[in-house]
View 1 (cartoon, rainbow, N blue to C red):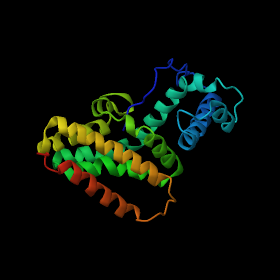
View 2: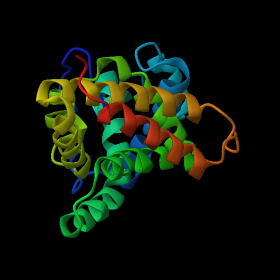
View 3: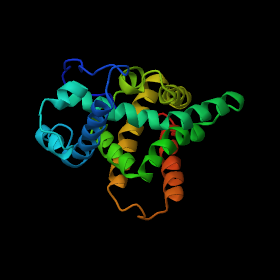
Length: 224
């Protein structure tokens, strides 16, 4: 997944979990849900804070700053929660791969399938549409080592993907190809998330075909 772009904003003044009241936690969740939807529909850079606050049933425009540290802080939280939703499935793949080393196609499947599965519900579809807005800013080194992906199973999978792809074209070309994969993957799934849930082809066929196509691109010989 792409790193979070934009200028650094002040750290959120979020109450600690020990002191946050149920009412405060409810407000934060409402703002998150409203912000996620607005970012997906209106764009994370252009969605109006006043609309997010209004959708959440709040009256103070500073609520986003208080709970998330601003617009970029809310974006980071959206990405963090999206990555967290996939963590268990990715960790299970990593444990299985430790016993049976995967080939390139299997690593691509492990990267793609949990992300594609977010399309199963509204929150996941909104998340995919937000992630897709960041596709053009993907940088493999920063994506793998910084931001919401750092220290996650997805970080480990992307590192394995670069290593596997390097066997065909070398490390530099492998990083470039994995960047292409991230851009195409996130942009395509964002488009898919905007379609009706039962759009053809069926989900399993769609994922299998997409995985095969992406893996073939990584596995092609180095150009002369």
